Length: 213
Length: 202
Image (cartoon, rainbow over all chains, first blue to last red):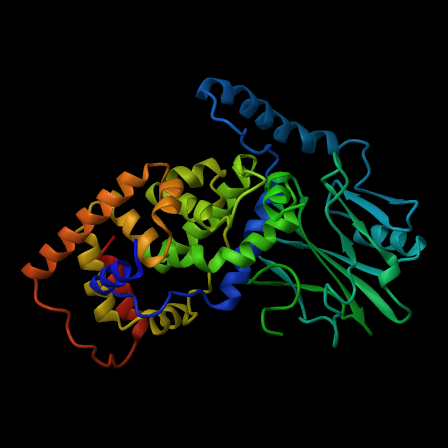
């Protein structure tokens, strides 16, 4: 279609301005989507369409898995695991969102000065922002993505980006639906002291400072 | 590796970039399809959940993923409940704005004068759904015929014919109706004005 035709049609039904979301809603929706895709235990839909029956079996298997997993985790498996890699980074997996102080202590033992908080849905750390100055993701790339193949439930931290006097602030949103498993991560380096996290009711995005601060 | 290839391979950070790049375009398309700011949020969120689910269907090579996303958004808007069920009723977990927020007011202020908007929605409502979808993709979101054909999974010829039917129907509608009212300054609560528009076109 040539531009003239499009203009003619646009004149018939004019939207003078584009509808836009307020910034904090945009951010809430983004965090919601990112949380949900981490929550979803199902594999991606296959490349080609299969008959519905063929899809049913893996879907049922995935459903069974989702039910079984929390029961397994309730057993002897530790809430988290921390390993120092050869390149100096730290690989963390969290099976259950509990004992943040223990995880904090383990990270410190490996040379990463960190504070760890778990934030349930509908809550938020207060006060926000928790530091006078957070370095940007570019200034201090604390988290390294993507996770190694086959270990997508974990994430890698680079303690090298945290200098003397700085603190790694790790906030995790926790989804009840999957038995208290981590849904999303917010990780930044604070230059200076970090306020303690007191959970407060919130309808905003669960992690990090509110938009625009 | 291209952004397409990274998203196809399940790279969440690449997917986040997709949201940054096209979240606004998807929201705008969803709003124009539904005429409802709240429904548009649902469609936007579900569109990206669907995109993640369908990521393996992305080809490593190709242009912008915008037409693909707008195609998904169109399908989601057509059957939001089915998409919500597919994602384990994710919408129940979507944080809603506080009830006292002046959010509707903000949207109304940015979108258009409420009366003109209502008139546009009336005329748009006179189109059949298939024509509405093509009109929104090609005229409002600026996709080419070929892109719109890919987005909807139909032929270029179908796009062309739906658009010319839309044109004829709109001309007919305009001839039968009073012209659009001149823009008028709405005094008082704009949020209320938008809610009325929503009820009219549900």
